[in-house]
Amino acid sequence: MKADIVTIFPDFFRGPLDYGITRRAREMGLAEIAVHDLRGFTHDRHRTVDDRPFGGGEGMVLKPEPIFELLETLPLASREARMEDRIAGRATQSVILLSAQGERFTQQVASQLAALDRIVLVCGRYEGVDERVSEFLADREFSIGDYVLSGGELGAAVILEAVTRLLPGALGNEASTRQESFTAHGHDEVEDGGEFIGNASTCGSNGLLDYPHYTRPAEFRGMTVPEVLLNGNHQQIRRWRRERALKKTLRNRPDLLDGADLSIEDREILSRLGKS
Ligand code: SAM
Image (cartoon, rainbow, N blue to C red; front, side):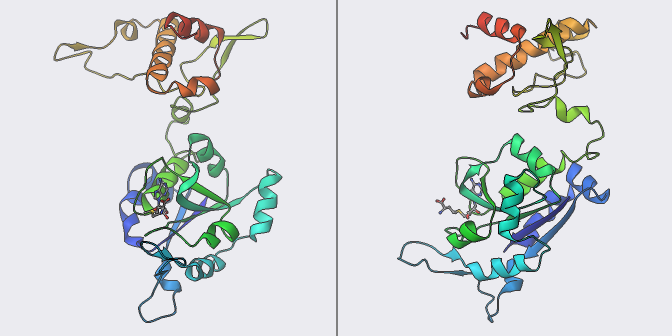
């Protein structure tokens, strides 16, 4: 996958792209990430990228011309063609504007983006970006959460990290993305006459939060690892993990239960936990 970041602070990305899985994916050639300096596409002595808002008001707004000119140097299909491809389910490219007003970026969106050949991430600053970028250039606007940051750079780094770790081969152990929080797929069902009664493997959160993890030592300053994890009974371990995942989801993110792929066993656990 190729990714292009459009920013007025290219040095910002030195850290986030140079560690862990993102670095490894780049070194392995799985992800090719280019950081573009928006100021390189200005034509005045001061390399001006912003201006005052029409209609008055606080702050400055990123001008459209440098952003349009920069994107015209990238091998992108026209916006119309990209939109048509997206509607037809055959998208290969996406131009994304980081914005507090965007759709919420989720694990599901990360999987969609990981399947593309190229993503372009446009980082706003100041009061935001001239709206014509959203209207006529970007395919999608994403927010990384309901709060306001000073720029889109952290959001672009978040999106890149979430997407890069989903690229086939980026993680050593492929199964480790299957069991994670929010991951909608990945259960190996135990079926009874065609009915989904439970998960055969401990992998696959099916839209819930992940279960708790423990490692050695089994006892640390009087804090012990739950006994069930030490007894080697895989059926009991699987049930315990599922119960704990459900418990944590119910406590921290009850909204996720509505969209989760729940088995009969899950529903029994939830009713025991007091959720109707
Ligand atoms: N005036 C804008 C508003 O109230 O929605 C906020 C602009 S913010 C100070 C400047 C830039 O930071 C935005 O253009 C966007 O690129 C980025 N940004 C801020 N919050 C964000 C969020 N939650 N998710 C993604 N990008 C964000």
